[in-house]
Image (cartoon, rainbow, N blue to C red):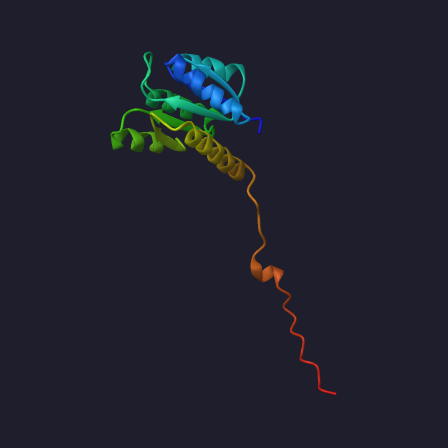
Length: 150
């Protein structure tokens, strides 16, 4: 693992906690405290996954998510939404805008690492699909007659 993860949350303590756990799991996390800073950070260096809080002081995560999806450079960037809001409308809206997961805070840090790993694996599989031949192409169509008894 060497994937770059960007954590976007206006709570510096949450950012540091998530970064420490992700780093321990082998990822290379960075963090910012606002949606505006997220865009600046994405321009500096690409990331493999974005962890995005919905409720932030300068903007809401849904707006940031929408703006990211409107930019062709980030259209396929895997994004996991983190929220303390349990209303289903937030989850539905985030998924409609292309979030890969919506996770409820507070979250167990091991669950967070597991979900990040799964989403990265899914994104990698999507980017590099395995093409299998149809089974019928793999079967030898020749029929060998049974041997005659001696």
